[in-house]
Image 1: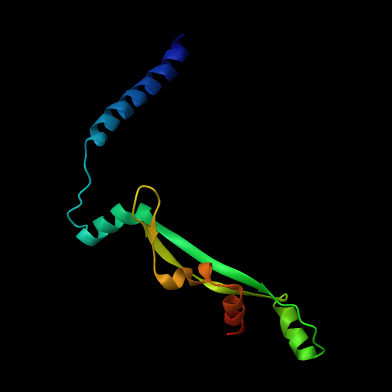
Image 2: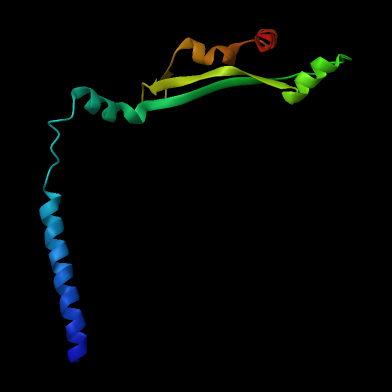
Length: 120
């Protein structure tokens, strides 16, 4: 019984001190006087920032006897990826996103325009 008290008493004291310290530390507010207004704004708006990736994969199918063209296309796995990526921001509660036009320019492009862009 005495051994049990020797172990239980120190553990109980440590536990009580930890609980008391947590109540004390819970009421301490961090000093934000050194944080600039821009940093506060960035932290506030961070959850609304999104990454946008818009791309198309063009698969090349040539009947060509030129070994140089075939070797080049083989390096590309007979595919070319075109597109853009960028950032945007959620501007409404129903999920509307605002971004620059060049980021999503290929999303509404027709096949002939995508094929033309793949040659560039």
